[in-house]
Image 1 (cartoon, helix red, strand yellow):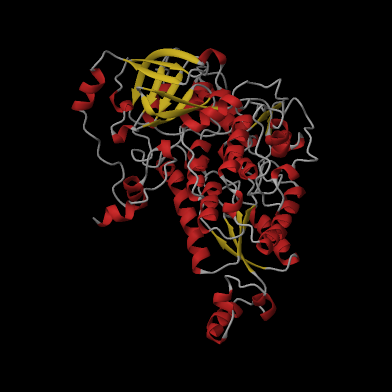
Image 2 (cartoon, helix red, strand yellow):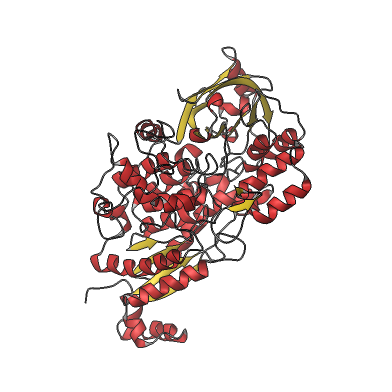
Length: 565
């Protein structure tokens, strides 16, 4: 038998103490002799997308045992972005990604598992686990918890963002409090990652597209028996990956990431993918510059009109053939996809797609009849964002693809939210929310409340919002985030004054602050960086170590050395 990582704790007379500790947990000699498979899971009782992960965990264990391995589970943290919204908790959401990655790495290195299965579902857990998977680089597979079903409210499909927008409608007097109470009861009908192509479902779909999750990982509903079967299959698949010594970096190549970026554009995924995909790629030694997203967007059409930018749910996408069917349809584009890349099925992408067909041409449009000829995401550049900023262009109304208006400047999300709900924002305005970047936030908080309030107040087709923070995958409208450099680093967004004219041209990828020559330089000369909002604990350390949103908000490689100096 070939040498295994787990031999370090189970073979030889010197390892008798290690075996004794394993036996203390009830493992038999037979179980100890088998490959030891670590299962990182994020089950908890605070995230709706994770409340059922104990069921997924048990199914994965069953699959591992069927295939002759011994499953050993351990947990990670997880943050619910919805519950973290509108208070200091949101400063910790993006920052949790690094903790999740580090914790899985620590567990996998301290305990020499032979292979790993990752069980995430929601926003930062999936990219965090993917980062760890590529960092550790032992045979591994991911199986997510699956999307929530949409709720029903007065004959319409609804979801979490419907409730956020409902708050704005109450303030705008187009919905009663009684109606909001009823909507609140029905919007989130049960377990799963929030319905729609929000960040969690975006990342779970892209996991499948990269090849690190089995077909169906991104779209099979959380409540479906097929999700349990998928989890069992993942447990069996990891044993095949171990036998064949197929490792994550064998799968997650530059070509695989470009395939995933193409799916990102075709699906109209969350703008947060622009943070997470480069961060994941970095762990694989693959450089994905921000400008590459525009290159892919220009050649890949938008084929799926999914919640929040369109009418279709993840369940409908699954019924139409899911991510695999979207990939199959993209083969009909001029550039197609790289079909030679390996996947966790043990087969190439081309082999996986041989029998795949689109089952609903309205949910997954043909490439010659797309919803948009361009992909879902655009990166804009200009004097307001020299290093770029990001917009989900597939969720922008046609009349807002080009916009010019006066800046309404706010130093925090809370100030902006109060102004929006207080009827102080008018049609044509450009709301600017700054000091919300990775360093300034800290933690780059997302702006779902103000963007939803804008829609709820009836301003979604007349008001733009610009921030160095980020957005929820549930955001729709002319909402431009990740402005880089951020305000806390002295980026130009720090020097915007109330009433300055800002011009936005999404199709031409431009964003400009229209001020007289030399004005920005003068304002920069007079600028003083604000004091940190948090001065102790993890958030303070994160703020000192984090890089720009344009580079995925990863931590500096030299951070440890810099702290020691």
